[in-house]
Image 1 (cartoon, rainbow, N blue to C red):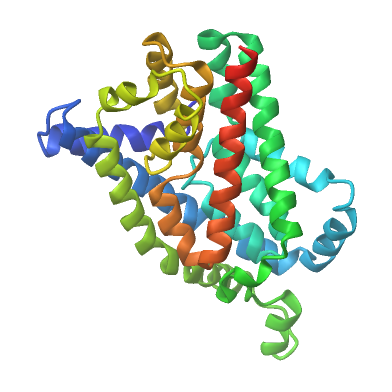
Image 2: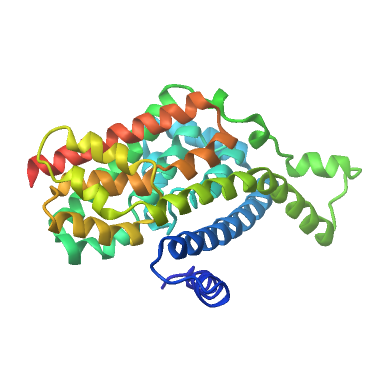
Length: 326
């Protein structure tokens, strides 16, 4: 079941019926993509930030943070974060609101990055579409490698100690005790609490949303105007340099896994090696120009560069492994 289907139906009505733009045209795909992703990511921002405001208020996040830091030695927290990414139906930009919520709640940075990598990289699409298109062997290997990349990427980010590169406004929140102290030591009425949660969540949402519009706009233009034939021309060579090229070509683009897997199938049918096609697809769904523009609002360039560098290297390794084994 696609929980975002009503949003897609609305985008279709606005684009093709109200604006009278032809389906499958350059501008049709661009406008439709922009409407759909803007509404989807905007709703996710509001809902998740509201939920995280509620969680920060009631849940003992300091204890959770301390527990995860103590258990980091085992890596169990990274495994859980990566697996959470597998079951969330988010693309690279849609997973950012939950990432922000995790950071603001005090969850270790490396754990949140394990989620941020795995959420678009390994998801429900790779579980139910891959077996039919590429077989069970490819499906199992892809998911194992994807989860490993997410875990190792998160561990490396944590090892580098890059918490100082998160924008400080994301880490500022009031605990229940502080809010009640400001209220004369008394608990807030339910009505006032709901207003407080809303305002707390909206403060982050309003600071991020302009970058969402800018990022999705860039992604929509790329999505609508970059033809698949352009990609096939340069990736059909069976040379070592095609995997880095595929990764770099895919990195600026933006799409979710459901939209890009059929394109990957076409690439394989046209003679592009499976590992090369996977590198291209994985780069599209995991990193993108829109994602970088939104993340730049919540982290400094040093952390953004480390995240992109680690993820790109992991994607290339995955491509080489598939071309070597299969």
